[in-house]
Image (cartoon, rainbow, N blue to C red; front, side, top):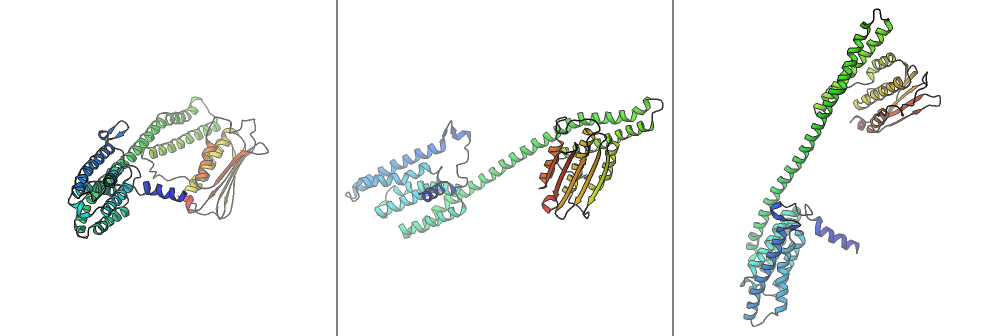
Length: 408
């Protein structure tokens, strides 16, 4: 029973592309009613009335050769498919073809051809065939054309040429309408996609403006104040001058990074500037040492050329871990370990307990540094663990795969 139900569902909808009719223009809609479907129902009733009014006199003229009841039924089943051709084009065409064949087998084709029955049949069948050409898949359209020609030859062998000509007209019109609808649909999809891209670009530009007006301004002020601070006292100690110089250098470096990010945002994500990697690790460690922590570095394995994505992510993870150590454990000792494995890169950044009590980095400032590190590792198919150690310190451990997928 399930197989029959699945076949019926596929026959009703899966043969159509799209399965449901396209949305109508407002001109063809009145509230919840589709004027095209209403017109089909009205036309089906008119065709039924014409067919019935034509068959009854002819039946009487032929001395009641055919009972009146079956003729009314044949008139109804011949015209009824027109009422649901828009919603179910393939079932409507199949029902129309079967009705024409059944009527021709019951009633002599010569008797029908001499009446007004044939024009009505051509209108109903042609509209159903047109709906198949517009909505159904190409292989089904081709099969419908072949069945039309073979069916016409089966009913009346002499009418095959006329059947070919009459079937070509709705098929050609349906193909033209289908092509125009396909082009209109593609244009609508492109417009939706371009609207989304425009909205994304506008949001990028808005974020870039906010970063430039707020963050860049404050970082520029920090750099200027750090440069001017030593001159506010007569003989500043060299250590103080050096510290303010480091602050200014860090602010300028951060400002340069921010400007690069602003350029990426305004360019729609096309970043052509060189990205930092583990080759710049020495500069990063010097900056951390200037921030009040002592750093030692160890490595294991044979250094290899890393994919760009892995190299950048490794640098950013170490950078964020060192920033957390400077922020939450000033004066502590930080150990950075870089391990080159056959299948990936292992990183470990561990700092000792702060000389003075300091809250856990997970609880201070509401930042997203650890979340960002985890996202970077997950994006490459790796993993990252971060948490306090038994001696009161904090450790960040990450494993980044070096497969081709990670590079992309």
